[in-house]
Length: 223
Image 1 (cartoon, rainbow, N blue to C red):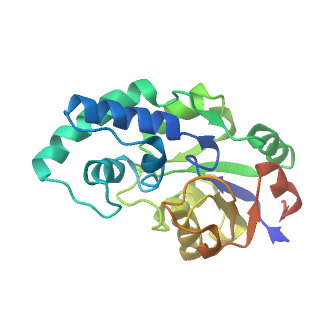
Image 2 (image 1 turned 90 degrees about the horizontal axis):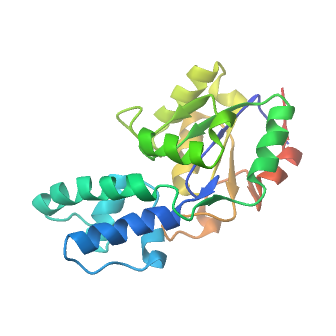
């Protein structure tokens, strides 16, 4: 049993299936730039380290690709303009998300959302899908100079919530979340769905794996 008084939760791939909106923005960007668009299944493997990295990967079709600097400088504002329109396009919370969050609130857990998504997009997505009220604390990809897997966003969230890192648990879908949690000194629960940049679920160092946020209720002893 994991003991915690606060729960931090990742956004893309954990709370929300946001691939449709991310992929549609990428498609529109590529078309506007006169480049062949990528299938959604490929774009999904590039999600996880923020929009700038996603754009780099889409332009090069490589997870570690670095596009021409001028092309990237042109592409970024194009992507962001389109993503403002598509951020919640065909997106939805995963099954069990609302039920799981309601149970966490009922049990007195303090909640925070820690994401690598830029703050303006995270706010829009959470708000449009009815999730924003659950998260008085939101630490986004541009809140600090660093993103997950750096532990700083988790430590910052702990400070805002008012708990020690060891008194919170991180829930996410990828190694970014697990590594950040380990470095911050807190337990981590991984969901079996979501986006892992092509990595095998079994390669992630997690204390538990759940198929739904409703299962967290039986794993975490509350305040």
